[in-house]
Length: 162
Image (cartoon, rainbow, N blue to C red):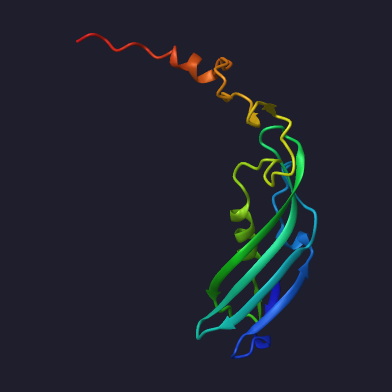
């Protein structure tokens, strides 16, 4: 998203619109794909030696659940964008790298397909109280399957007697 410095008046500039998702150059991974254009509402301003922007970003993404590996739609909204950069010597300012960083930082570290509560992840098992992720106790006293950690704990050497 490029802005001409001369388009920003002394009292600031408000811009709203959409940009194709391709301008973000998101990582080409199996677990991330843009479904809609990037929507933005930004206030821009200039100081003596810098340019600042505040506002909101939104984009719908396709992520993959870390439990079941199924793809799901995730509407990402960054409601408090705040960036500042040095005033470049060129006529235009490219805000794209900073906006991309804000979007990548707002992504969930471990995306789950049941994030909104509208569906139950297929990798969960039903219990009396509700769905429980596989490998966790449901509180009914049923034995949990052996974990990989218990096997690794057996590999520890016992302390030597002093």
